[in-house]
Length: 360
Image (tube, rainbow, N blue to C red; front, side, top):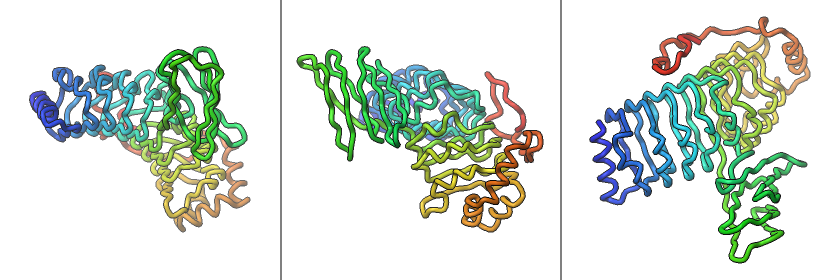
């Protein structure tokens, strides 16, 4: 059905449209439609419910792409070039057959929403730089590196430019680059105002600053995770985290360091207890969605959940629960209660390149 895609590309170019939507059209191959990769004005590409097995490396040529939907296809892996899309803000690869993420997957410069629901991902599937999506690390002008850490509650950026060093403060995320030459800068951000101080400035050299996006929503439900994504506390701008239907047994204490979190779904896992520190999040706020049902919670905690979320959260704050939590942590893992979930019928198990467990 490449003819269908080719015709859609030609039509969109003729009409000067910026979106292509081909849903359930039997599209299986993209590499024989080179016209697609030269569509520089394309901002939205929807190819859900098709039969696509591979994304060509040329996808990086879609420099204007902001939204990519590949929901319900037959993808087993992704090209490493996909993370170089400079304007991509939303990526939906849910309901495929992914077993691992490509090297450098955390390098997306503008990604805000990532949906990896219903695949075969494990905790070894994440790339080494996956935490870059949290905004704590990133790229500067494609050449330099920045690092971020907290100092007195303020996020500090250390920027390396041509061997020189500068700083950016406050919670705002900024990208700084140079039009010509090299310059070491020190920048301060307060109340949304940016002050830049230059040590040296090459004649004709200009400095520009724009907000840099970082991940706001991460969907990883229906996979084979046994732990939270690595260094989840570094995802300081995260608002939505969905980890339902995995095999996660431990909720990290550091989860409270995600202050913007408003949706946390942990149902159908292997969770026995949750850390008392989680109550630092506004779990029962009007706009908060917290779900931890269908887990083998310890006796007492499960009863509170049945009574309601408010009773559950109030119990987490008590000395009684802190005592139960401490006692549980002293138990060896083999004494932890587990549930058996049969996931052998998942469509994502039908892989060719990778061997995945038949059940979890």
